[in-house]
Image 1: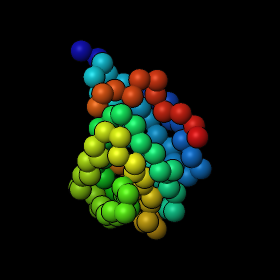
Image 2: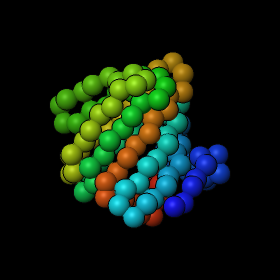
Image 3: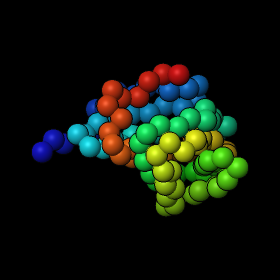
Length: 111
């Protein structure tokens, strides 16, 4: 068993206004993200199933033509290979946790 503390995990600025921390297990990854107001990710897809849980703020998640606004306590699931993106539409910093199955392996990368 391995125990982690988020405050001890290095932060990576993945895009301007968006930073994250990542932990890779053998079969799954978990990332903690903070996004400044207006920050957004690029549309992307990957072979991993992705589950995002919103901790704070309002985040707009999109996949294809479908767009959903999620608030704290809500969860969205993206199937493998589905193009998707996220944008902070809050007036304050938004936080969410993302799970990838299988594991990301290699951590977060600056774009």
